[in-house]
Amino acid sequence: MTAPDTPVVLRVAGRPVGRYVTRPELPARLSPRPFLHPVTTLAGTAVTELSPADHTHHLGVGVAVPDVEGHNFWGGRTYVRDQGPTELDNHGAQRHGSFQLRDPDGFVEELRWIAAGAELLRERRTVAATELTDTAWALDFTFSLTNVTSDALSIGSPATNGRSGAAYGGFFWRARKEDTAPAVFTADSEGEAEVHGARADWLALAGGGSSRSSGVASGGGWTLVFAGATDTTRRDPWFVRTAEYPGVGSSLAPAERLPIPPGETAVRRVVTVVADGRLDRDEAAALVRKAVSQ
Image (tube, rainbow, N blue to C red; front, side, top):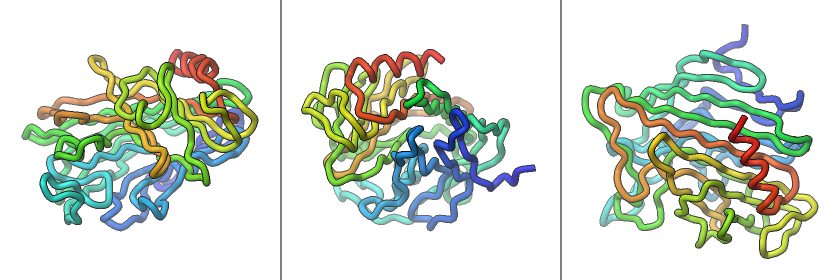
């Protein structure tokens, strides 16, 4: 029998493409939580980073939220209104509970979000890896957050606390940092300034190799195409960084705090295409359609 703290190795077409660590040994300041790293293309190119020097609390692929009723599940400093980023002793942790399913191509996991000795949220996380083509696969990541307290709680972000343009919190993918910043584009826009905060159906991040200004396909490199970030009633905006560091996430609380009443659940799903080579818009859109429909 596999030990519960043994990392899960995701495989596609028999090849390892992701390593999921359930019980990382991390300092409290990093808001310890399960994460995927490394995640690779089918050719073996790594497309994640773990605790890079620029942001040591960036942990590959996972769920991170900077403000759950004032508790930091993101790591690092907390943005305080009229004060700015501040070191606070307010870090929470996501604790692995159990696997309901654990297979080579995915798993279903239960986690507890704990802060100040109390459980605030219970999460059910479903992750699946699926082959799309001989050069691309999809990571299907769904998380459900249930308020297990007897009180109303809400999720915030630096944006809801006064920092414009910093609505990070939710699904987050820290991509590999290279000498040249990656290209980022959607079906109808391009560049960090245009894409950040958009509620686009999908968003592509492309690095390595070479590319023309339009982000069209060329030899070498890698492309990540993100789609979803929705529940049944809304589409979350995208949080995007390319110049400072490469990262893409969904924004649970872009302008207002997201309330989760006692016993209720917030659900989000993000499907990410992981492809070798730099895709153009048509290629990215086609792969996303295939990934989301599976």
